[in-house]
Image 1 (tube, rainbow, N blue to C red):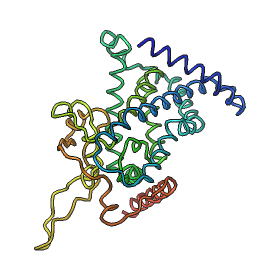
Image 2 (cartoon, rainbow, N blue to C red):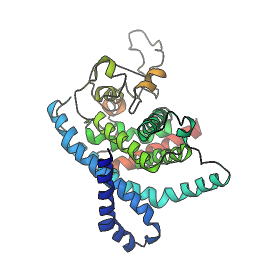
Image 3 (cartoon, one colour):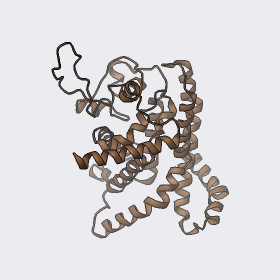
Length: 337
């Protein structure tokens, strides 16, 4: 482990000194070299993730796919999303626009004695050691992710943005980053704020984010894999998460059926909600009653997209534009309702 850490640190330093530092000086960012060095670490993590995706998850998809690839254009769009995030373009926006605001806010909180807390200090005898404290923080952030994910599905304005992610009907390892940029921005701000509040070390935060993202790539893969009866209850599998993307199941709750006119079918569920919100751990779905462990692999997409032809956009810019339109309509509906 120490050898891997040293290798990563040396590679980060070389990439920073040879590439990122000269660029920072050219852009007039000489006063923020520490942030540029941190950004170099994120870039290196993203490159490693892409190598693993291409070298490990990609071959697994070809070995045992759930479905044949029929829409390569949709997958190419997902690749664009992935490159924007993993090569640091999205983090540049956070670095320039969001982090200065958060740093100022946390500075004010520290002046008033808030923000110097470290979660691992609550159980120093238990969390003595980087591995145990890392696992603790991983579980805490996964709990936060579960409730963020539920909010994305239950708050109509947030679903208007998150629907971009679920509109992919050709799900692959690249689908994880297929999100509206505003949706990602909201989630990233919440994660950074929580990280500041619970006092996670920067290196551990990078590791938690990197591991979470990589497993999310695996869960979205076009891969016919289940972890079995017990394994499915320990760690989220591609099958478990695919049910979350299933048409009419993963992002809809089932209200009590209402009696209709004789001879008509019962009204279909239309309320927001769904199943299998866990990102890494299915424990939260079990605990809060949202788990579905059916051993099946369903088609993915959104009901109104499939049955009514609602347009969620074919390309990157169309998806971003339509997401903002749905968000505006959701706010308009809440005002008139």
